[in-house]
Structures are given as C-alpha cells and as structure tokens.
Length: 172
Image (cartoon, rainbow, N blue to C red; front, top):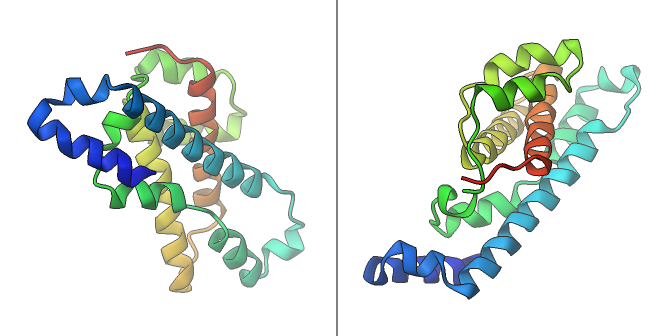
C-alpha cells in the first residue's frame, strides 16, 4: 500500500506535487498510512504503559524483551517507500503555545522531557523523533547497552504528545 503511495509521488516529478497530493486516491492512501502509524503508536504506548513489577524491571532480559517488542514496522515501510514524511504527516505545526498547553496535562516528573521536545515543530518531526528514539533504544539493547527507564519514558512521553496533538489538531 505504501508502495502505491510512493508510485503516486514519483508521478509528482512530472505532474507536480500539488496535483498528486490533491488526488483522491492519494488522500485515501495517506489516511491509511496515518491510521496504520497511529495504531502502531497506540500499541507501543500500551506496551510501555504496562505495569511491570520493579523486581522484574531489574532483570535486564525483561527490559530487552519489552524494548524488543516495540513496533516500527509502519515507519520502516514508509521510509523504504522514500515518501517524504512531511507529505504524509502535514496536518499540523507546533509552536510554543501548543507545547505549553500540553505541559498542563503532564505530571510534574514528565515536564523535564518537555524541554527535550520543544524543538519539534511539526507532526512529521514528532513522528520522526518517536521512531528515531525507538530505534535507538532497540539498537542499544541489542548491544547490551541499556539506556534506562528515562529513554523508555521519553518515548512514551512523545507518543502521548502525538496522541494529544491528534485530538487537538489545528490545520496547517
């Protein structure tokens, strides 16, 4: 499905991006990609939100399995298609006021992560940051170099930010 999207965008070279992105088939495929990505992020959010006893969290194998189970299939497929993220995830931009509004929904301990995320200015950048952080933490686990719970909490924070902004969209 994402390959079809890539084929449509390759036509954009000849026809122009505006013509292709206004195409009904493109819009439908774009919506499918957005929903597929959102579904994957909801799964990852639920997985990271599972209550795991502290005694189990001390076991590195439990952490490795948890992190190894995070899904990036949708993002990987999208990246392979060479479709620019900004063409798919273009529904909103973020400014300081958006992050301040999100801050009001956070617990105090999550607010330090807000500083790390404030530079994210668009839906596309937020998606990219989520997946980059997920892939990095998975890579570190395969090398037996655990990044710790803060990295896991940051990914969860970013996913919750994505979900928050999806609910409170302001169109570009």
